[in-house]
Image (cartoon, rainbow, N blue to C red; front, side, top):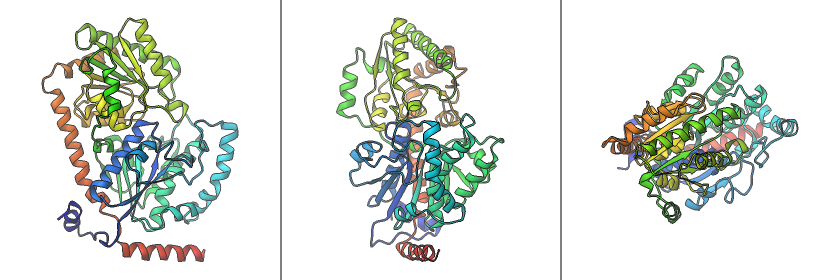
Length: 466
């Protein structure tokens, strides 16, 4: 009996027809430049493979770039050549580019978004989703920090962004297709923006499973009225490290053994002014200098973890600044911005002496291989929640408040403990086992081929009548 059949036996569910391959559609996959979002997408794909190794899988991005294989989904295309990659059918303010001009692009975006918004408001399914989901057995919303409202952004713009993320999930549910959300951070939803709460509750009410990755998101989900949210490890834990030739070449080029190298994955704060970035860089530089003075490391490797695709996401400028600061202080350091996949980054980080990560998924990919890690939180409660789940609740600090002393203390405890690496590795393996076990239930909600055909015909009939 397969794992899926066992789950179905226990829960009384009907399996997909054995006469054809299941069709699974992932939506809201962001971009392979953003290694965190890329890691979540890859983790969800691994779980889909685990449950249905013969599935026909499509991945719908959040960018409008028509050439997904060369750009937004290049790592997915390389690793999974049989996966169908589809650009975002819903208009975005970026229009396939890496930046937007508010006074020009936002009005254009609103005008392009209006028909789909109007169709959804009156309870119908936008035509673009009817095409993509026509034969789907299951629709999966890929997680991350995308279900929230940002008080630093104009309310209508923030609400429109939230709508575009929720729209495909609402459309699939309206078509009668089982819909699940995997690996989300939900919130924040400030009390001053009740419309965002109402929109989220309305658009996601039809989901079969809403799986979040931190305790705060679980609380927020209950507060805004989402049905039966579940807590599970971040989907990136479904990955395994990939020690490729590119990784070996990179590590062999460094002037120190990776076991004596501290890796730093820096990013600019998305809303604070640059003085906050400068302060945090100074604290990080002081921390690695102290670790070197204590004989725990010999070298620092500054990694531009995320390469875009938007300006605010691109870690290269701030990473180069940190590298220059270390050079000015006389701390031996190297800088890399190679386009490594999440699995390759896991292999790179897994060899390091320690990791200081502003990027959450740099912390996750490091702890997967047992690397002592300190995380710096810059948005929502995702970092705190994920680090607590890894047994490192004391090894996290807020961007605007973190100190060198806290980083040194948190890392020294781990680096001088004989059990620290094995404990982290065991926790990561437990997370992976948990995801694989529970994925059988999540993906097991996929409907049968008979239900698929009947529901698709009914949907087409109903839409035709309209």
